[in-house]
Length: 311
Image (cartoon, rainbow, N blue to C red):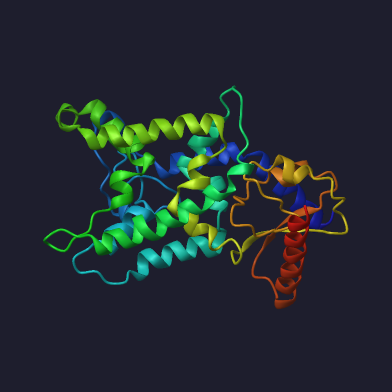
């Protein structure tokens, strides 16, 4: 058995174990489970390290810091200075893995996947593609601009996304802490009700639509999407093997046709297209591509765009 064949088999098995990997990643990101009963947060040195996925700092079990929360804390500081650590680690995650993080390592992505498995009628999001761009607005305006532009008398900006929008915050932090701490319950008000309403809305939508928060609202997903074209982890489509059966595009719940754009910003590298391809035309590529490979991909993507316009 040659090395290429071994590589393909290992990747196929890897994608089959996606749910197991997601579960393990969520537990690793929230390893201090006894803290849920104590109503206390872990505050060790590791908490200063950003995890790759969307995971609330205020979660009692949280191992590390949320990258979005950390970034907002920096830009909202009264002594704002460019953070090479926070920005650097986000760029590092993006270049290394891109939106693979959304597909395999994000706890809230996994939560939405579980909700979508609830047996009920499902709805397609193919006609709602325009909503994808909302998350870029959330990233640019709510995460970056507002904490810088709107500050209190001390010159400190609020973490507006974490405070007013993020459903993961109330799921992992607000609800668990209020359940075990009566003093927190006594202070719950309209802001808690507002965010609880957002969480309930996301839960309902996640049962009906596949990953609505990831597709439409998540600023972290928007950031990683910017790196899908340059990340070390990428897909390749062998045009000689591809028979244009369309199974990959019909299977993709993120509404991506991988044969037309292997680096699509919405592709979360879940591997479903690889599993259903009858000719094994889709494969995983790891590493920087040569100028010739990049030129080839550009031509393939341009052909795909022309086909899209003609259809």
